[in-house]
Length: 162
Image (cartoon, rainbow, N blue to C red; front, side, top):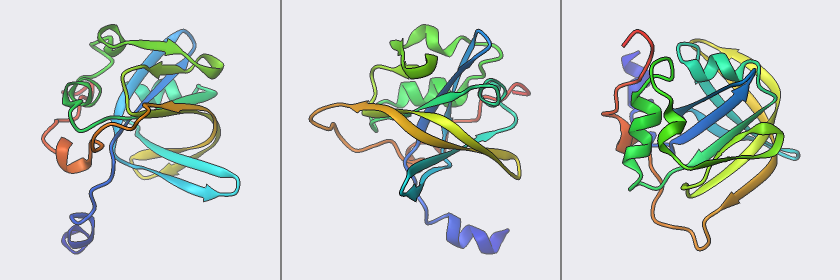
């Protein structure tokens, strides 16, 4: 893997918070693996760890919400990235509303969208959720720089085993 570190270590993707709602449950987690994956039609993929509660809720969800955080929203990143939904109601401490299809939309974020899940793809220890955007919004004017991987590397993952 050391050879791949030379490549992967140079990447610094935007981080996002993904939220899911299904079967009366709600969950959310900080995600570092996400990208637009199609131009026409527009599609976006988020990769969720099979270890966390958000994945367990998302696998039954029809829609997911994807949120971009500003660099100064470190507290939100720590909540969604460093705590497990198996022990903490992450949504209790944040402002959110119900969006399209019952999606959980965080209100204090730089930008967000809700996407219908059109495909789930196995990918090692993560599962990719390919999303068809159906609702979106963001701050106008845009705020400061977005939270990036380098800003969040010291947040230990909040998995149930922790």
